[in-house]
Image 1 (cartoon, rainbow, N blue to C red):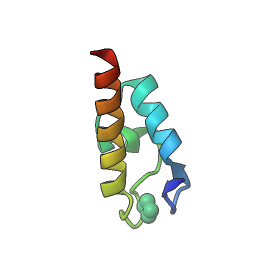
Image 2: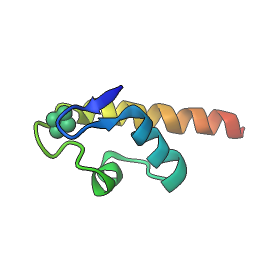
Image 3: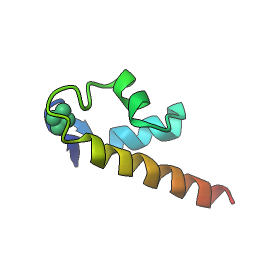
Amino acid sequence: MYVCLCHGVSDKKIKKLVLNEGITDVRGIKKCTALGSQCGKCVKQAKSIINETIEIQYQQAS
Ligand code: FES
């Protein structure tokens, strides 16, 4: 599923960056992709995907 339609950034891509690169916020995603640099509508959803991914990771670790 595309989160950022303007730049074609998918939820999978965001999850991968969180899990593999240890990114914990939208700013980090923005450094690696163009997410949020056009209309900005995707930022809120990107944030919740980042948080969900971190939460799942944390639950799996405990
Ligand atoms: S949907 Fe991401 S900048 Fe427009």
